[in-house]
Image (cartoon, rainbow, N blue to C red):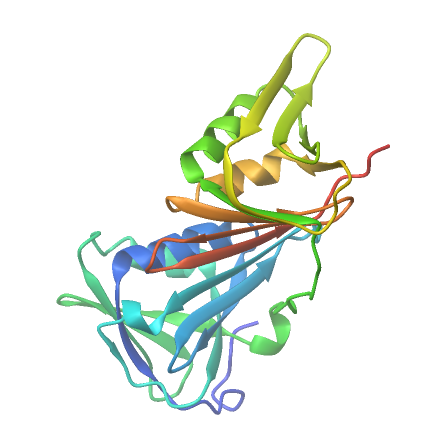
Amino acid sequence: MYMTDSVNTVTSPVIVCPAQPLKSMVGALKALSDDAILVFSPESITSKVVDSAHVCLLEVTIPNKTFTSNTSVGETQVAISLENFDTALKLAGKKDAVKMSLTDTDTFLQLEIGDITKAVRLLDTSLVKNPPAPILSFDLSYSLDAESLKKAITATKTVGDVVTFHFDGVKTKLTVDSKMERVEAPLETTNVTITSKEAVTTLYSVQYLVHMIKTLGSEVTISWGDMKPLKLISDDGSVTMDWLLAPRNKN
């Protein structure tokens, strides 16, 4: 699965980025996949992964404004082990910068952190999933404070493995039921956009939602609908997390 010299024909960008956005990116991607394709461009670093069950998709973007330097010309795609990338990034403190470039043979991603240089071997891009982002429509969309969502999901995770999102035409609440317990948590929302005036109820996996809320900035946008995926976007200014979670069967 490792790349050979003859496989890769990309030209090498050099990007200098604060360590923390990179750590946030890799940490989120690792929750779903062992490896990923990174796309370097003049505008950003992006990566998309999907879990093995094809239940949850994540696209992470670090915009160009986050970088100290970016010499990318056009688009360069590389595949990498997220575990190996994460191990390399652990050498960096939160305030450190990471200089990334490809080696002369384009078989390693070279990371320079202060006086330390570490090279991570690249994988064959043809063997790593790069899932397409589906085009979807939703019944409702709104913004909310990340802490309120974290509190609601945290309250549900010890009760059951499925959470019900219910919109009554005015407000949204989350509920989880078990034989011994019931949790009900309203969501305080703003900037509400509704395309359906009817009540909407959809079920989602608590396990995946717990992973998703670990990555949130201060403000998030949620879009969902009747038996439609839940789209959750969080942007803290330095990195954007765009999650898509498939609904659970109501039966």
